[in-house]
Amino acid sequence: MAKKRGVDPAPVSRWQPGETVVLRYFKRGRPVGALPTRVVSSDGLALWLSPGTTVTWPAIGGRPVREIPIEERYRQPWRTTDRLWEGDGVLILGRPERAHSVWLFRDGGDFAGWYVNLEEPWRPCRVGFDTADHELDLWIDRDGSWRWKDEQELDALVKQGHFSPEQAAKIRAEGERVIAEWPFPTGWEDWRADPSWPVPRVPGDWQA
Ligand code: MG
Image 1 (spheres, rainbow, N blue to C red):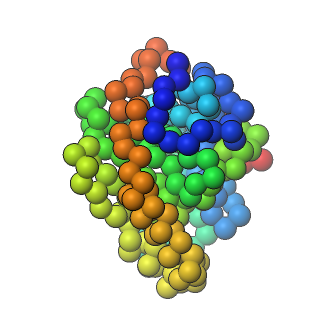
Image 2 (tube, rainbow, N blue to C red):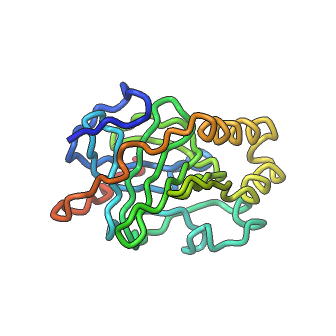
């Protein structure tokens, strides 16, 4: 059942509640990440990433890229590795035409806070949506305190020429816009997944 939330109406999704939507992350034109999720809103943009989901994650030499030192992380081609999503599930809210999504995290069942993943606006694709991570993120604690995350990563991408200084400024400006707009709470903070739902899986041909 759809709930009203403090974000835009959503004309871009054709997906229905209960369907599996894969959020694909691209890097330099290649799909390097895939999160299989369950659609939980009638606008097709609230996606539940269940605990125990096998997610496809970018990797270098079989190691998740986050384990690779920043100086090396962007110099080598990214491949993929499969991992189990551990801990609590995450509710991901797509924001049509906006360069971010909002991730609602729980900790031991209690609402913990909002993670604003700065990324390219979602583009519909055969299996769900395509985007590309912008590295910089925001964490907003449930008490409303907030901070940037991964500023060093964005700096490294600029230094190594993957983003121009202008692109980095635009990425940061999107985060500043979210803080100025303050779409919190979203209306989904008390929402709970049905524990009987099956865990979505990435289709074998997700990279096609
Ligand atoms: Mg990010």
